[in-house]
Every structure is written in structure tokens, then in C-alpha cells.
Length: 253
Ligand code: PEP
Image 1 (cartoon, rainbow, N blue to C red):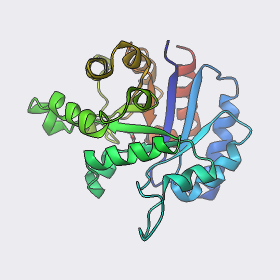
Image 2: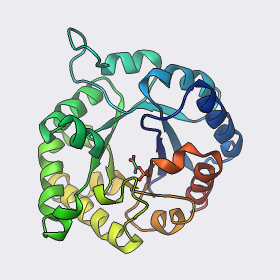
Image 3: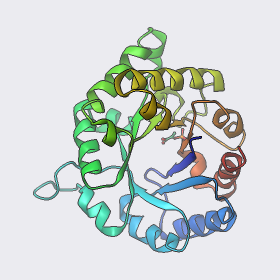
Image 4: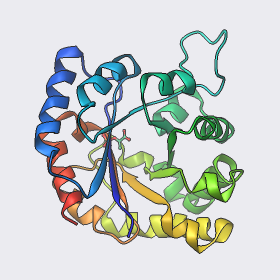
């Protein structure tokens, strides 16, 4: 059975005081949750602080983005080596906000994913369709291209270390979530594409999170679907009570 993996993407939110309270609050609520993996993904500037605050807990810390070069004249960028140096373990790759606002392409996703894996960190690679793409019947084509162009260059061994997050763009930050049936259908489709490319063992092992307005009310039903192995949570990860409730639902499955 695959373990549920719950990650909180804090996006560009918080300050030192807020983050300290949030981390301490969630640590307190999650000490007995041994069946799940928990990841905080703070703004990069606070990542070292969050790593210090979580050092005695089982909570991992990731970054929201890295560049695929290791060093050099890339003003404003952070390398995977730097993420590793401070003790981060996971990197979000290809989040829809990066694709939408910063022009991140499937080609960049492929380079960043390789770079993260080459540094022995875990990429959480986001896939998802826009409402327009879904309504015009392009969902399978879009997800197929995101997978094949972004990830299918990897060896089976490397691919099985990736976490995939299916995040329909129309459900992110909108309060509209995919129904559990809609989400399950797409997760099964993604797992099947992985099976066709890498075979049963890899496709059964790979973690596929769902993301898009997950909260304490809808988490249980979404996470209870056969092919949903956790959640990438945005807005609700900024509240101690809301995020802790999601963690408990996942732990109790
Ligand atoms: C996200 O940022 O990945 C996300 C899913 O956000 P939200 O939960 O706010 O929709």
C-alpha cells in the first residue's frame, strides 16, 4: 500500500512570526501521526528557519522552485545544490503558477526534475489542465504531453523517486475542487500512462497527490480514492487547524 504524502505549499505568504506559530502549531498537532509523510514548502527565504523549527520532528521541508544550473550569473535564482545545502529534501517543479506567470515549459520541467534527482532530492512535479483545455476535450492530450515531455526521459529507477501532483488549474485557489470521482478518474489515467511507459511495478509504487482547494471538509473523500496518494495543499496549509485536520484524515485512512 502506498503511504499518503501531504505537502503544504505556502506560496508567497507569511513572515517570521506567522511561520513560527504555524510550524509550532502543526508540530504539536501532528506528533502522533506516524502513517503519513508531511512536507512544508515555505517561501525560500524562510526555508532555513523552518528546517531549524522542524529539526526534531518528522516533517520534511521543500522549496517551491529551483533553477537547473548549479551556480553562476542567474540573478534571483536558487540552485538545487543550495536547497540541499540548507537541508531541504523536496522541490516543487512545474507548479501551474510557475507555468502561468513565469513561462515554465515542459522542457524546463524536464531539466529541473533531472537536476533535482541528480542531487538526490525529491521532485514534486505538478501536472494539470486549465478549464478551457478540459472543456474542449484536451485533458488527456495536455496531461500526456506534460508527462512525456516533462518526465518520460527519466530511467525507471529515477522516475520511481518522483512524486506527481495532479492539480487541475481551475481548482487551484478557487474554492472549486474536482469531485472525488473526477479526481480519481484522472489519477487512474495518469497511473495508466505510467504503466504503459514503465510497467506495473513503477506505476503501482508512484505517489500521485491531488491538489486544488483541498480542505478539512473534502480531504477525507478525496484521499480515500484508490489512486489518490496524498494532497498538495495551498490555502488550507496556512492554518494550523485546517492543515492539522487534513493530516489527521490522511493518517486515519
Ligand atoms: C497549490 O498551490 O498547489 C494549491 C493546490 O492551492 P490551493 O489548495 O489553495 O488550491
